[in-house]
Length: 213
Image 1 (cartoon, rainbow, N blue to C red):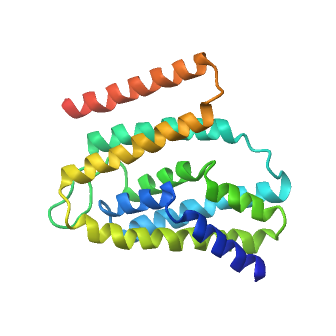
Image 2 (cartoon, rainbow, N blue to C red):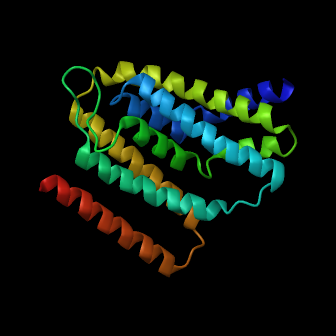
Image 3 (spheres, rainbow, N blue to C red):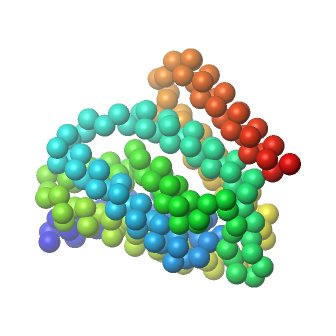
């Protein structure tokens, strides 16, 4: 139980003000709060199972820089996707997407947590504590922190227009994407950056062209 409460408290604190909490707030302005929370919960279970197992078995040997770089590219792609596809239903604050909102939330948070400080904190906790209490405690700590953001997000979403939500959500994806790419790829070669930027340009062209069509 000591490991459980330690993991819950530390991950809850680590999640406050983290990009995942801001994503929870943003997504909650578009989608049903229960769907967002369920997507976060399921995604966190999966991510923290890996990070806890990695902490127990491999310690700190994960290639964090590459994970952060790829996650950044994915965030930028989500930003273009948001600009293209999301719109609010009349009066209920939900959004229409090409996929079910659960899977959008699940995949977004899965990517957001890869290489994130909460994942690395969970990994560190697991190097000196048992697997099960760290896994459960860290998962609940993150979900509780993001639930606070969802409550705020739903209240905020009722007062914002569709365009404000759409542009705001895309901006968050772009900013975090650029930050993750810089943080993870600062020492990468020019060739890797060139390929990544080409992929981003093609992704933006695809999504924005589809929107215009």
